[in-house]
Image 1 (tube, rainbow, N blue to C red):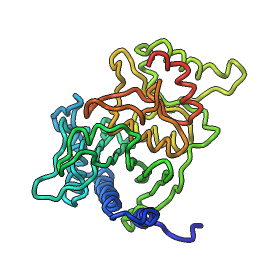
Image 2: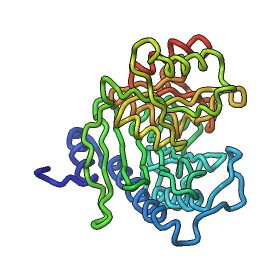
Image 3: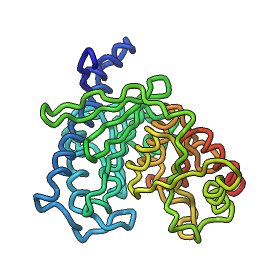
Image 4: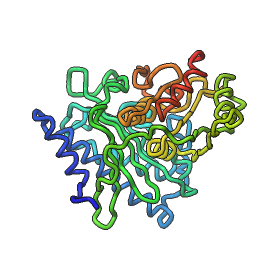
Length: 337
């Protein structure tokens, strides 16, 4: 049994002590993200009991139908983060442009990029969904956040993580390669995130699992098809074959990959030649978590963390998980990237 109970607040404070010059603002920003996650978790868990399921009738900037819980999660995060003086601006999957900090509030030195409710198409059928977030430092002069502050490569992230709303609610985050990846499970009886998964490392050797939507096989390039054929057919060569595990919710599929190892793939196809996952608030944050846990994240030819986005909603192919399996994927598809 653990000799002490570590809340996320205590963990953040302990990490802050390792940086003597810290002002506390970055720590306070992480507290606010955790608070927003608690509020969203409460509403997700009650979604079947209140009038919050279903669609709003609106279409977001991605061309996707907006669900009521999407709207709720978006509002919760914006309202939790816009007034504390930590941020200069925000970027969300749900908004076409930068979200400015209202003039009546102080501006800070950080940028928050987030997907308020990833996997929202699964809301009505009770599949695990999640929130993804990324934090950058402001790089331009002046108080107001600019496009240049937002369009930074993932390698420059100060922190990244996700919240998964499933049988339990977990918040997983990292503050960089040297800080490790830590997971906190929400105890609803006391309303606190408690450290449950310290220093997460992707297992090595990994589980022999791949995760991809095989329904799109006919749309893939021939190298991608050969990669999947190889994973399926390894047993014929005397090796244990790989098992397919695919939920269809990015946070859920990545969470399993992080804890068990394996390979998650969302390759380009004829309908999405540039890939489908958004760089700033889906691929890059999960890539930082993955690499900080000892894994790799690639677009098929280069590390995702080195990709410099040109627009707020740029997309990318994504291969992430155990390093050896991402290397294998690149050996098949790298020539076409």
